[in-house]
Amino acid sequence: MAQLENLEKPRNNSIKKDAASERKLNLLQRLFFPEILKALGYTFKQMFKPRVTMEYPEVTWDPPAIFRGRPVLVEDNGQERCVACGLCARACPPLAISMQASETEDPKERYPTFFEINMLRCIYCGLCEEVCPEEAIVMSKDYDITFNSREEAIYDKSRLLKSKEELKERLDYLREYRNRQFGQFWNFPEENNIHAVRPRDENWETGLSLVDMLEEKKAGEADQASSN
Ligand code: SF4
Ligand code: SF4
Image (cartoon, rainbow, N blue to C red; front, side, top):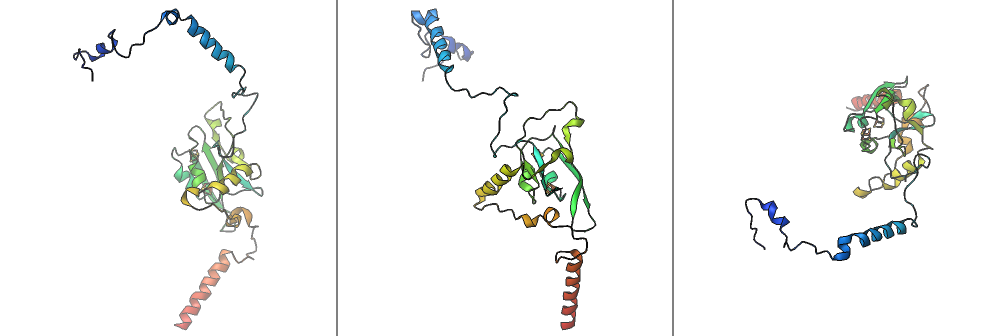
């Protein structure tokens, strides 16, 4: 290894005239003209190659299903799938999600009275989508997001809800690729989504109602007590 001569100011060593890395330029190179011609030739060649840029916003890009655009709520049969469990709000790193849960007369039916995402905070990480047990919040293809005020950046249910037909590509993608890294395939059973899929049970007629379950439990306990 070459010894550095100027140890007091080591930076001066690199600008020595006889440094090994110094490139020797011939006369043509010192004129720079051939180099300019070479650069022009390269530019000319590129003019005939297919274009990879788009004239946005006149031409818009349709992203693939893997793309993570703004998060949206899935609307299923005219209702949100969301049961306001709060998991997405808990997982959201910048605390962008807020909601208030409520119940319908059927105590098993939960829904968010309001659901808001502050898009100034959202970092498009997709964690809300990962944790949602109902497949009720997914990342859409929407990347064209602008606001004129801070208030406008807070998306409420009316702007978040998108029908499952519109989100089909993303939902299919999630079904195919989710959890692959753990050696299992995501199989979202739609019947799990009782809130959105099960018809309203006003008269307590299905085996799923809370009253039936409580009565069954009471009968079971009475049986156990009498057998003892
Ligand atoms: S994508 Fe990430 S930052 Fe945005 S709402 Fe979901 S969890 Fe929060
Ligand atoms: S979107 Fe999913 S995770 Fe978030 S509150 Fe609704 S059901 Fe729970």
